[in-house]
Image (cartoon, rainbow, N blue to C red; front, side):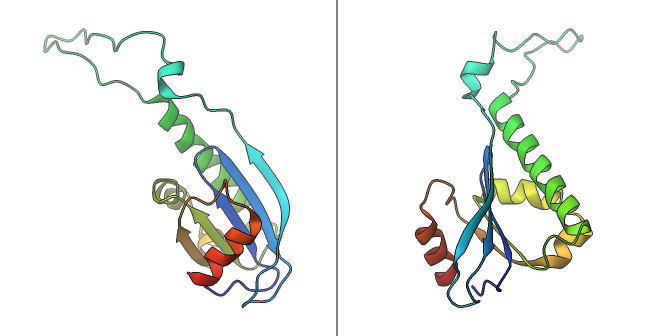
Length: 143
């Protein structure tokens, strides 16, 4: 994948977002960290206080359980998409590449603003948030 010089590269998952700027050229990216953000999101089992509640309707049955961990990951993706919108509207970047696991990428896509979509140069459906920068650069070159 070509990563234009000065492109904004977001590497994210459901709780961590790394923002890079490509100081290199399109063929040999040199990603420099611009900003990093991480949300504490305990496992779902650690966020629940009780079993699923009982429905009070005449139909009876158990209400579906809420996955609080997933809810927080989805909220983080929505907040990240909102930040991308603000930065796009402020002309902070001309070109954007997003690297995220498929589930997070899908959630981000739901919230893309038109200006973000217009600047989107590429997406890579991979979880690279825990990888060193040279590995991220290599994954982008290979994509």
